[in-house]
Image (tube, rainbow, N blue to C red; front, side):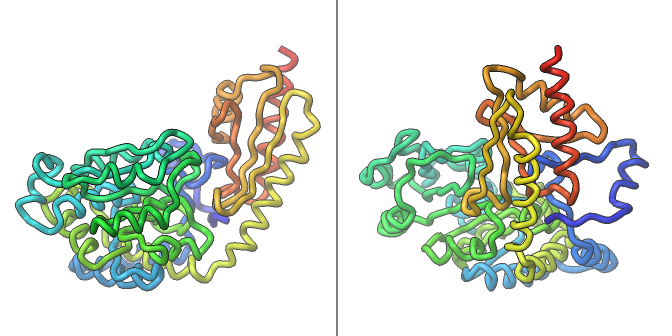
Length: 378
């Protein structure tokens, strides 16, 4: 459960920006999650001295390697940057001439194979790193031979997206790793928003992935503009060679010394947190909302509580016979006071409990009821 302090909104009031109830989850658009006080203190302490960024990244990278079971690790400027830099690492390696060419990768092995059912909005980051995406499979199915058929001398890597935004139909991951490694190709896993539980930190490395990407500012509760990449020694070295403070495509993807220090502390706290207790607390919030809304004749409620799909339970609300428009209700919630932010998905509203503070579930139910009652009377 995200942490907060009584003074958390003061700076925003001074700036003139309102704070919100976050029912969208740990998404970038609403600021990720809230950092624990220990992380904030680490960042404040780091701001009081100079340090060589390479040395600091290497030290935090060793911690990343330990917690993920990888050979090496490094800090990046969020998981999207991790995708771009992983692509660059597989295409340009640590070759200075190739690094300076990117994102122009013509004539290089630059194709990154991806399942059609795993395409997401953010996979364009692979293209930012010089990659050309090659799709395999259909939206709901992939034949075993399709990966082998797509591999050729221009292939640089195989991507795997672990996200609730994907659909079923990908090949078995172990089979993907086996086929890729048979051709001496690395497998890049984007697992940005799949934490907690803690064991997900090691899941993909244990199964043979060569590079794995996680957000630092979501379930880990580090700085929002931080992420981590774990994997093979040579590929992590190439990620760093393409990144800040050097003059490659990652120069603008800067990670501050404060963010690196904050992530180091956040990782330690993440390992010591009772995530199961937090999940039960969020499940209680979800159940409270379902209980408060399920008797309405104008909507149906669905509670999704599979930890493999979502770091915290989500509640989906669907209009019955067009009784209300999800986009209009979302906008009315956002325009109210306090502003409540929800997502529209699958033609309904989705309430993600991951970042709800204690007691906010009741506010969400009350405001929803008021808005839906007004829509019904209109």
